[in-house]
Image 1 (spheres, helix red, strand yellow):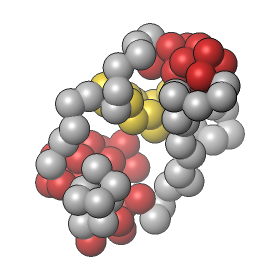
Image 2 (cartoon, one colour):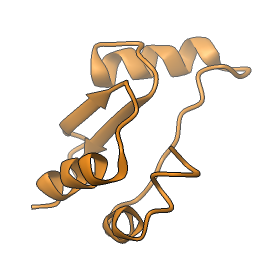
Image 3 (tube, rainbow, N blue to C red):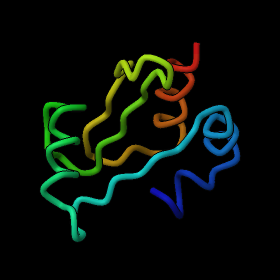
Length: 82
């Protein structure tokens, strides 16, 4: 996703309107990260994408695997930017 989808000009433009945060659930704190992922998405699926309101921490929308192509991912982003 990082190489093919996130670098697409349309997707990159949508992502510029957001603040990115990443969780890697295979590192030293994997139990805590997996617990947070479970709380936010009710799933441990990977990849997981979450759009949140930064002020309230309310989860606005999630996409849980499989990876999406550029137009579909950008449409999902755009839907949640409104």
